[in-house]
Image 1 (cartoon, one colour):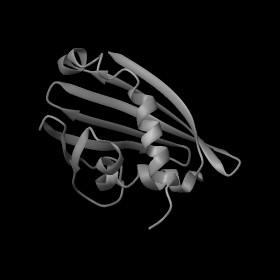
Image 2 (cartoon, one colour; image 1 turned 180 degrees about the vertical axis):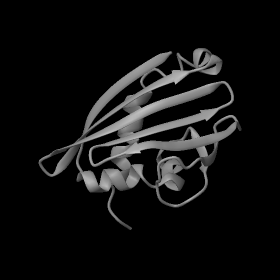
Image 3 (tube, helix red, strand yellow; image 1 turned 45 degrees about the horizontal axis):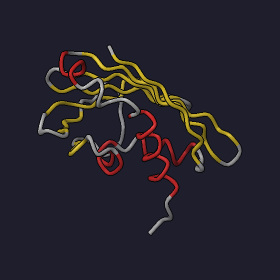
Length: 135
């Protein structure tokens, strides 16, 4: 299993960060590994959201737990499963976001080098998503 954890200060309130994380069909807008996420527009635990990922593999995304300060997720495609958590801590007018995740399965082993630094990249993309000006 490959595990990672990264933390960033995001110059946006926790409510805006949560909204980005809890809008499943918009996840591909800031996570380029995801081509599509389908299903309900809003997050609900236990619901499987059909998805396709880079390389054309199909699988599903799930929210496994949601509370005020953390969002637990899981997604999988054949040979690869990720479990993760996003922790949100208010800090002034912004949010300290910690993202931790683990990869499991034979495809995860093959891709382990490609996933180095992905926690930081995800946090940077999330920060850009929630801090850019509204159109």
